[in-house]
Length: 497
RNA sequence: CGGGGUGUAGCGCAGCUUGGCCAGCGCACCGCGUUUGGGACGCGGGGGUCGGCGGUUCAAAUCCGCCCACCCCGACCA
Image (cartoon, rainbow, N blue to C red; front, side, top):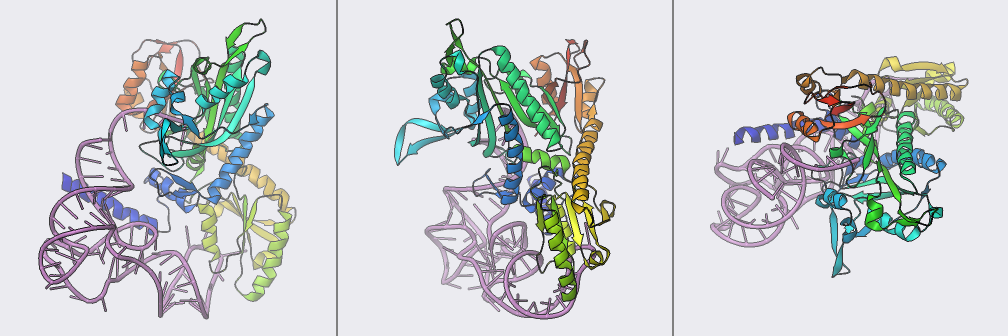
């Protein structure tokens, strides 16, 4: 038994070695998670840091994150939110003020006990999220209904001591934005929670071409300390679900724990109603696993750090002299796009084609001697691999053609991802069928809302309740897929990251 | 935390069973030349206190002991 296990592990390690040195990626259908690991490193998005579970986000990956950030930030600002920065270190006692919150987070806290060579009076935790310290500050700042609402967001890094880590999807340290708002009324806070969820969904669909489903988390899956958690759930290329953003209605839980009180219009002291919401660098993982293929990364044009890669092609010095001026002319003409001219010497054009495909650049422009003669360029769409995605077009009105093509790609990515998702969502007729379908897809089934039923599903199948969607509920009543009792809503069940 | 495994060049590995040749191979890297419209090739070159400490021995990557680190499998999570 031991011998056999050892052999298997060594064999896999050996195989891994072969794969890493081979030029081809591990195909998705052979080993999706290996495909993912390779793509992240080979596209130079991120690399492993010396500390277990930590990663270095490389310039290309960070550029992608910056574009994600810009797209979200502009939405937040347009809806009246402002940015600020709160400290990394939080007194440990703060975490303990909200009962559910501390229960949820204490197993994954990193705690600082020594500072300046001396044991600290009170240990400090490195923020796993900032509800507590922000709650503390809000208590100082909020005195009157005139101070409300407070609509603050921060872009920050946080630390959660996870057991099993994956690049982007789950790392000890990750980057995100966390919004924290305080309101006068429950209604207003609930509205804010949903309004942010709408912004998240709008971002995911329009900018990232990641189709997401908006919904409410079950009690078991909700944020520690929240009254209600909402989520955008996306389906990855292996049909597993990824929670891609969350928005929480916190009720008065944190207001009570941190004394966020204000005098209302009738001069009566009231607890404020708060929300919090976040999207993290995990979203990069969502982009990778939604669009990527066996050639590598595929990036949506609206977020791609490089939208167009231009490859000059020549053999002789004469050809080079003829081609380069045209390349320069085209470069200037396309200056409105994020472009990269690949002028590396010593690697063949074929290598460059594959290289930019690995890195997910949506559109490639090739300019060679034939194009100089014919006033043409070759363009190749990343979303359509191989010859079918390649065409020769006139240099005339090139910027317009490129613009149209990028928009077409953006649209095509969303359509393809949506079709894939819909094809893998099932409506099982009974529990046995549910157990089958969640092995390779999602189930959309009636659920009575009882925690025992979702626990049973989780234990039997490893699938969890992803969300109770806000849209697409059939209405009326059905029977719980597990216990058969009366159910008023349907929920998505899937294996998740 | 429990069970298993691995530490040899930047990466992936062989060598260890049975101690002794100069510690080797592939990829990557550097130089020169030929190549270049789908992952080029030849020749030359640089790079390692064999995870650490101790022991056995004339002699240790190899045998023994302790320690450290990382990986994989099981209970939590943006």
